[in-house]
View 1 (cartoon, rainbow, N blue to C red):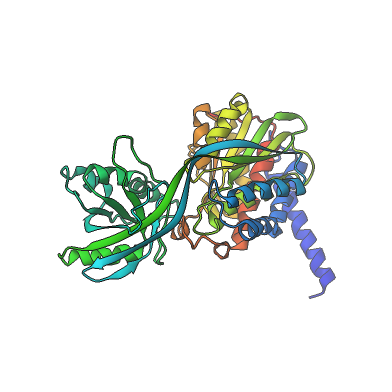
View 2: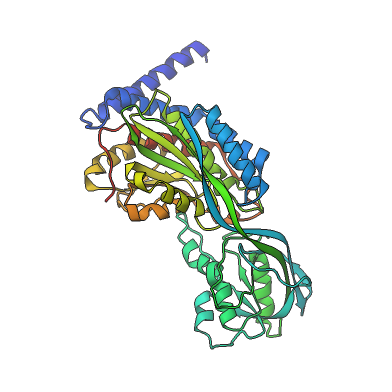
Length: 469
């Protein structure tokens, strides 16, 4: 086909798109026809842009793993500052966040009897070390944490508790909550029942042989025992051996150390608003990651796509309200960066007109919802209509919670939004050595950027000033 003819046809299609967009919201109380055309153009630009891909490729390649308190974490902060400045943000700054520092040195495990073989294991965050030669004891299996909790006192005396709970797979990740309870406090309950060690089936939906790490906690006054997780394949093997009815003995060797208080930094950048500079849209992700992989899905993608979306949302000049991107520190260790941000910015939290965090991988966004005052719902519906062409469903429940780093913001009733990614296979890779750049599909990443760019532009430039419930 003639290239000139193709260009003319493309121009006609795009012009028709712009006219249709303007006509669709001819009665809009929030946007002019020109602004709605700009939204459509930004959306199309984002679907062609490789900015987010280039950012996440750079972060995972040039920095790599970014566990809080490590040299990688420090390098990530420097990386983010440099990238924000290069992208032309009006302001770039950091704020400190302290957290309990923990370092992993080594880990291994094996079935000693009745069938000697290695297992793929990882220490859970904050775990204590075993003796240098590890701990060796008989395994006692429980199907879930509740079964262990309801068991008699000393049911696990002198044994290693094995929680064998299999996480459910779902698009919205609803299996994570029930599964993560065993990771968070399983070692405490096991110790209370007399156990000398704790191992669990990974919080995972995967079929690969990677163990999944994640945060765990101890309780004052309860003996600390090693906390660990094995791959699903190894959990299956251990389950089969226990089912044979003979004693199963395993050895766990974890070398790790709690190192007191560490310090990292939230990295914050802003395009300052032209009319209402104090009011701001807040988007972002968390800059840190676990140490096993390179943190591409968790949360390099969220970092990159929100940085790119903010830039694209300012394609046609300064927004009416400021657009602020926050890359939170030390999320994996317990939302420490988010808590520090709220404390440092408490007086200005109510200036947030919309907040959304991307921290669920890089698959396509499939649903959109809000948590706002009823007066803002017409605006939310307009945003949803602009997202519809990206195959994003408006759930209209007005009950969005936002990402994990927005949890410390909840007492302030900020206007939170959810741009929900498809998490069907997210927990195949979550917190593993398999969380690497090759798991990100550039096309799906561009769809995320487009959605966030539309959302950011419209909330920053609407006539309506959004408030929370």
